Length: 371
Image (spheres, rainbow, N blue to C red):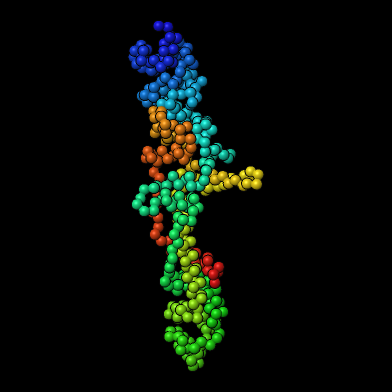
């Protein structure tokens, strides 16, 4: 049998007819092909994925000896495509990733002077697949999906957030807002006669005696801060002459409380994305006629590692979802890696109540909007 006949049999997928001449060893056959000058005639798709599994340096040998000169990803048999990409990623990562972005994954673009990898999103909700959906009640996935969709239905507002506005609002005010509160009280009931018969607090009875009057007293500049410090006296006023102020304080607390909870949940989702992405979501703005189109992008933290993990995990899995071109997108590639347990999805404990420090901060920030 002539050497050219042997090559033809191999290219025709009939390795079993000639393997015995080479002790069933592909490397021996390849060296024979080189010695006969047939390396550029060899059909690479007929090398079995098992040969690459057993010879981790096989692609290096093929490259060094010209077998890959006229080979590209799409010309290879499906079973060895991931072996090829794994080798190429280690040999020339920039060129390999560029090819993957241009040919295999349609939603990753190389942008910027430093060649960063940016994921182009159909919509922000697409990122919800990075969050854990395990759990019996509301999961990290449920929360992320609602927030990323910008759907208000994710959040059920807290009602009756306080039953004590003195303790939960007035006690938390900073000096600047205490001055505002003092001015409001003086504007409402300051420097006017108030009948002691309408008040039971010791503060008011003592104030009347200090002012040397009978039956009446006045709230004045010099006692306003002492009044605010006296919980019993303030609660009596809030349930009477200052009932409108009391309602405003309830509104301040409710909005501060709910805003704090929303902020905490938003931070859990967007901070969680830092595990896989190294930027915030940004919108590219383009015009199409009268339409303004917003295309969201986010920078992938370690595109190389993600792709390398995929092709390594799927070497020899030359069917269906085991190929990058079958996945077609970064998010679908990552979905399979999550399903295979290569990466853990983003997870967190969803709080039952907001952080009180944030509530307090909000109370003081919102105060002037209501008072």
